[in-house]
Image 1 (cartoon, rainbow, N blue to C red):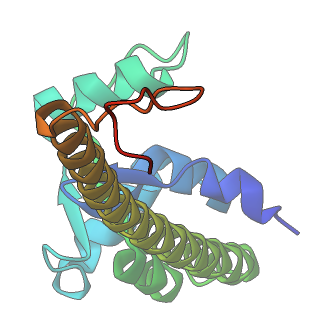
Image 2: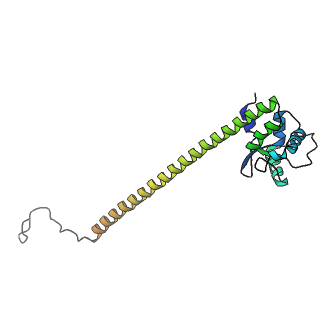
Image 3: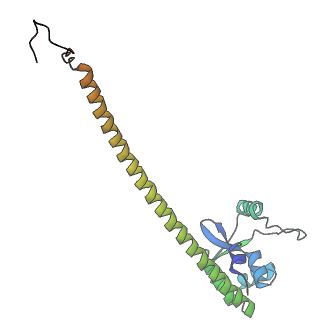
Length: 182
């Protein structure tokens, strides 16, 4: 039984598609990459462009530098690798009709489902985080408005104090003879 995590680590994102390399699939199916690609070529009508496509030289180079797909002692490849989408991988089980192919395909389908679930969870978390940020910004805006209103009240009070005439000073003690008593 193949661990789903092993397969998940081999699922790549190329041209906005989740795909797997032909050599990784061949290794999982325990067949040479050349044999896997021969089986695909013999059944080309089962693999339209949205099921499988060949990498460009640039894409292959980027992948090799990211995940070190070139293995020592193999002498390299003459052709750019193929990558298979989830649908293409499902179709592989029909052209590689062995018990191993069926088991591998089941494990791969489970890995794709698990990735979709993880992505959905991350999208939900990202959406919640965005909502919290928006709420916080709204709250900060309201706090800023309240702060401005409070500052305006204090400024008005300070201005009233500064511009109001001084109240008459009351003298402490007995009124003088010429002053009226209060």
